[in-house]
Length: 330
Image 1 (cartoon, one colour):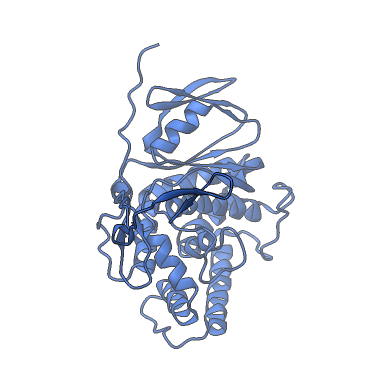
Image 2 (tube, helix red, strand yellow):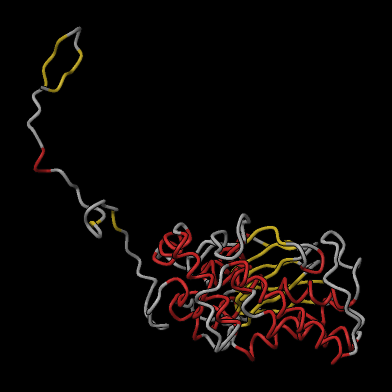
């Protein structure tokens, strides 16, 4: 078999500007292996090859076996791997981050652990959904109320526009098919969004758990960021799919969401928005992935790593013998 060319491993700072990167790929009941710089995906229909560095997220559904070599390649290429349930609607685990830097996660931890700063970030998040509106003095209760009202209006508008009955968000997380077509489409669309957002958050070195609006869950920050794009992308697509009544709602929803993510440059926007929220005033193109380490100090900004400190405190040790031959430093 001839060699299949891959794509060079991207640097972290190149993540927002990789135009050809596929946002996600969902596979199930297949074997995932490695062929040079590509992952090979084999099922009963044959084998397909996907350059690893062109992937943002590989979603592994039921019946999928993946080789160690494939995981190694995807990790080195900066792609995230997430294990999901039937139709991609349950999340189980994800792969390694691309970054070596702790700058963003340190900023995230500092912001989320200070009530005043956390509220300020939450207000910015809500403000991104209400362009032109001053939300700087709203309480969290008021912000939740404004957001709830906005989404209910959107649901009613889309329901009327596409002639799709809407009775509320009702679904069974353990049974994808035990829901109305519109709720199936919403579940499929949102899980794709969560996967892409999670991959960007992990690649940037942030914690998926440290949320500002959401709290108490291992993916709180993922839900925070995903909520910025639902009304624009996934909710309208779900109503479009439900109106068309395809045979496989999940597959059709994923296809349309993937196309919309590429057209709307969601990965690029997500990376830029996360940086903006956590590092105010940071240039979107500024290099973050500097492979350096420092030692923390309570008085100095940073102390060099890999240096033997305390030489000025060295004392000459004279070894003597006493107490049945025990060696004692004097």
